[in-house]
Length: 65
Image 1: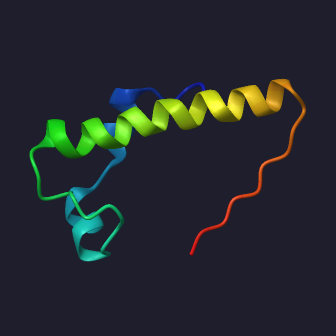
Image 2: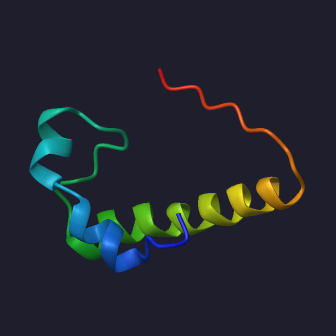
């Protein structure tokens, strides 16, 4: 995750595929600064959470439904 920055993540996102696959939250037809701003804000928070967990030698459980 350290090597993925906001620009790299945005470049990998495929808004059309997100819309077709009904990826939550369904905001991908909004202006880029709105939908990617939302995504990137939480991505940075998730990265920090995961780095802290690794630093503290904690495990993470990921549930995808």
